[in-house]
Length: 178
Image (tube, rainbow, N blue to C red):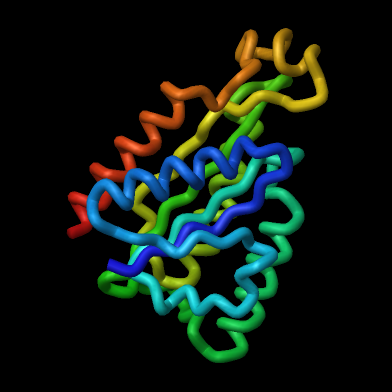
């Protein structure tokens, strides 16, 4: 299985989740390619059986570098006729979306729209998205937002327990896809 983990991380939260996904894959014998979106312009997503796309939630959307990557890929793939009406699923092509969030105002509801944008991107390409993972991450630079939001004290998140769950869930997904 060829797997690609694409992500952008501003504070390290999303990068930690990407690394946990990598570890889960490696436990099941899959050696993924790991790229930040700004390094992945030339990546051919259709060369992979599994594409994982991750971003922090930023004002209810994926971070700007992820949005830029998505828009450029959509233009490229549309121009080559690879995005089809009705977005038919391509057999053997799978996707995972992961989103980190602090949710100081409305909790996970701040992250779900970002996850759905990334999911729609992969589905438009014909990938069968098998998981959307939302992971709490500390709001770096603001003790107020890291301690007084809807989620309570989220300092230090994602923590070992959060990352172990992602690693486990990834390993289980790989077992299922094999």
